Length: 102
Image 1: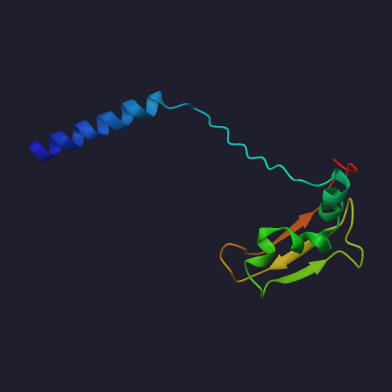
Image 2: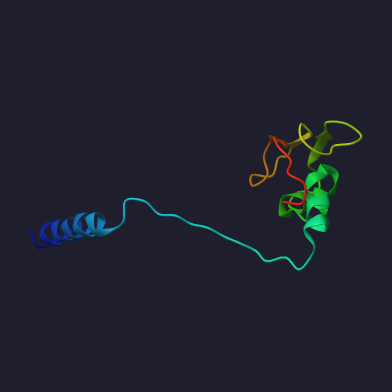
């Protein structure tokens, strides 16, 4: 009987605490890069240069990459990847819009 009472109190406390927590949470991250906007834009706008800075490219050396063409640059450029690694998986990334040096 005592165990049931303790479990009941714990459940009641969890319910009370859950009502005190905020309904929505906002998480934001930022990074300061010590380079010009032009240099950063060049690396981000050209999908074939993403391996120089993207952490996903180094996770699985056996990942298969397919690019939209010889020049995978700018709006409309895309690449797909296939990997057996659980943190990499399969997917497609497309550059939808480009604003130079932003």
